[in-house]
Length: 475
Image (cartoon, rainbow, N blue to C red; front, side, top):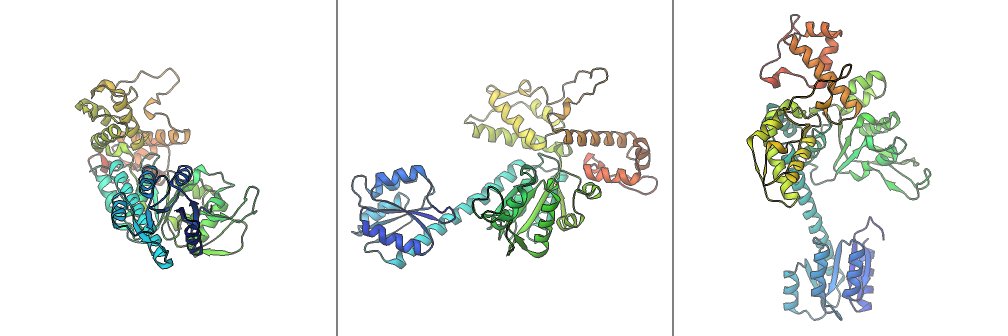
């Protein structure tokens, strides 16, 4: 069965009716499966998904109405059109009550059949889009809650850029919700009815990234057994989210740049250019300016992507949002794990707010779910994991360092976190005097400014404005 074509399951005990419907539907580009009884139809439904059912009401054995009920149990959103040679009004009313989308009578009229099929599939498509958009909105509201200045500014920026066609580069550490930001931009955009396609550039081997993005022709490389559309084609009319774009190979970068410049892509193994209408949103936790200087990221692509930069703030810079987020995560965890909502001691929120959250919102949500699962009737301070909160840490061993507060993170992230905290420590030691802090760190002032920007350091989020240094510079 061709997975790219909508599949219609036709169930009728009359062979001529099945043959007529197959001819009508296949001529219009639909794939057709057949069954002559309800029992055979259920076997098909249990083994493979279909997009639409056409069921005769009068069937030998189990009738079409019982089949309709069973089919809706298996596939809750399956649209079904019923047919009857008797035009029995009571049967049609019963079928609609059980969830039928439409009906027609025998003898089969081609135009009537096609109108019913198109309307049923269009309705299902619209319902799916509404559900997807609603789910994206709920997820953004669940994980990007907060009234901190950083979150209010982020929501305002999203509202400004979403309705435009401008490209967006989302910056932020792992776990801060960069994908949620991209999805929310799509949801508020003029392309919201189109697809939102996600590609994690870091998770795809470099030798396969071009095929993933641009597609390939049959036989273009070993293992290319058939033609395949790339994600640029899949995202046509919508938004393509390139996550961790800093990990993309230089050859793939060149092709992405061409697609952004011309609106055209070329499948691997082909010479024919295809037009695509795609809005690209990229994200990274890397310093792309540094990658450009090192020659690992194309400068022209960086400028193409970085039209509107948005920063997804780390949780440690909006700790005032932690109680609100934690309360919501407790509710969600209780619902998802089938438990009753639990009362939470105030000290729990104090402990959670005192932690720096190196894993950001993702780590907070995991911790909240763990506490819901492992606690008793109420969540107390004793349920807070030992790695979280304000418990004093044991002094580090001689010649060692205490890195426990950073949690379990990759080496690259740990290096960035330690650098950030050390720079912040020196800035605070020198009351944010840039010149003095730069001297203490042994770096140029311009370098320090870049590091401050890279790590999102600012006294503004700590209760006061950033002061100018003696030479007039600001962080």
